[in-house]
Image 1 (cartoon, helix red, strand yellow):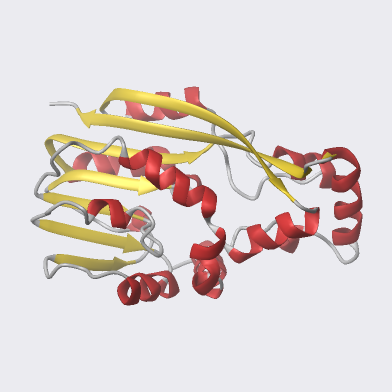
Image 2 (image 1 turned 135 degrees about the vertical axis):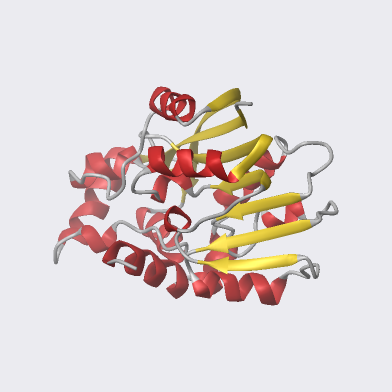
Length: 249
C-alpha cells in the first residue's frame, strides 16, 4: 500500500456513514449504468469500487452464481455488509483494484471509480485479461469539465487526472476491447450556497478544501458566490461518461 492508497482509504472511510445521504449524483449514475447491464447476468461478476453498495443493489436484483465486491475502503465495505442482504456466493475483496488480480470473470462493473486510477491504461489491460472470452466491462466515470468552477474560482489543478471521452475510447481500444457504447452527459447541479456545495463534497470524501491554504476557504467561497451564483443558488458542473465494451475474441 502507498500514500495515495492511504489518503483514499482515509477520506472515504471517514465519510462512509454519510456517503449514501449525500451521494445523490453517484446514485443516479448507478441507475443509468445499470441500464447497460445484460438482461440476464452471467455467472461470474465483479464490481470494482462498490463502496456502500449503490450499484451493488442493481446487481442483487438478479441471481448470480458468483459475485465479487471490491473496494479500497474498509469503512465503505463495513457499511455495505451491514446494510445489504448479500447472498452466500458473494465474496468481499478489500484493496486497490489496480493492484489486485482477478480471473475467469464474465462481467466487470464500476460506477464512478475509474477517475481514481493512477494508471487506467494498464488497469484496463489487466481487466481485459481477467475476463473470459465474450466477457463484458461497463463503467461510469467523470470527464474534465467536472467541477470546473472550483478550478476557476480557486485557481486549482484537479488532484486527479480527468480524461476526455476520446482519450478513454483510445485507452479502451488499446486494452483490447470492442466498444459497444459511449454516452456523455453534462449536468449542472444547484446548491443553496457554496458552503452547502462544499459540505456535500466533503460528506462523500471528495471535497477540494484540503488543497487550500489557510484563509483560502473564505476567499474561495466569496469568489465562487460572485461568479457562479444565480437566483436558484450556486451551481457546479459534472461531466459524466458511461462506457460498455466486450473483450475481443
